[in-house]
Amino acid sequence: MQTFQKKILLLSNDLRIMQKEYSYFTTTLLRWFEQNGRDLPWRRTADPYAIWLSEIILQQTQVKQGWDYWERFMKQWPTVEALAAASEDEVLRMWQGLGYYSRARNLHHAARQITALGAFPNTIEGLRQLKGVGDYTAAAIGSIAFGLPAAVVDGNVYRVLARHFGIHTPINTTEGKHEFAALAQELLPPPQASAYNQAIMDFGATQCTPHRPVCECCPLQASCVALQEQFVDQLPVKLKTLKVQTRHLTYIYVRHKGQTAIRRRPAGDIWQGLWEPLLVDDSQEPTAKNPQPILIRRGVKHQLTHRRLLCDFYLWEPVERPTLPDNYIWIPEADIDQYALPRLVELLLEALPR
Image (cartoon, rainbow, N blue to C red; front, side, top):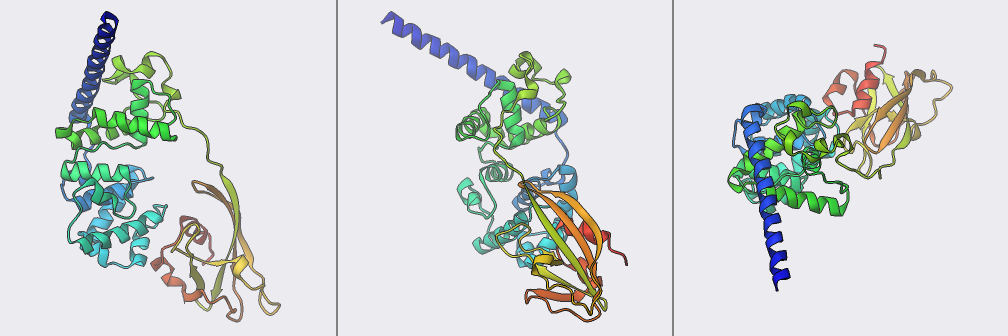
């Protein structure tokens, strides 16, 4: 009986120590945020539309670049109803240059969902029903716009928690995701959910950075396991599962009497819904009556998350307008900027002789 009571006492002591450690971490982070939090325009409002828009834009995008896009979207479509009324082409065109265009399509779809509901969802479950909104985005919008006690877990959060608490569980495994999500929720102070979530994201983005973290003036240095045991650069752990494949593309820019041919890329492939010049696989071989295409650029490299693209780019100026597949349309060359183009195509067009 005595042994059992001792075990209970030890467990209780461990729990009190853990709670004290968690409380110190959270309190220190909130204090740091009061003095060092970034002044961002979407933090000066409680409008869930503005907050949601910022979260979607900042997925896979640095704040510096996303800031400009957020301001453009807010100026063009200041309400969710205005965004819902826009066409998909208009939204894709505004998104051009940000990459990961499925985000723009999801954004537009979700705007129409919200408009149909008549109000912005104000629960985590309701937010998750929106197209393109996962656990992280729902927690971010829910906590910041509505004060919901839901912890965010993104790359910054994984890094801060892994280093501070010395967690070596890989973050891209089911076990790791559950472990970090549970810890993040445990550390969250419900009355200050918004401030805490923004604090840990800012801390990871500006203090506990992926490379060259500012450990020498970190307010958590005394309690950071990774710093004390000198393995900061080894955390967080991520299993290498991504195999990057190389894909070859050949584009032909057809120029005929001030017009050019483009098509909208189909579903189920990269750049769905964006426009592109003639792909060589879809073209007819140039006839003897017409000049041969001229090589403008060869082996242009363009990196996507899962693919490395190598592209050859040609200019073809036939005497007669060639017959192309039905999914190509002819437009005035001067109007091509009105169509949403992949970043690679934008770069290729810059090399065209005028």
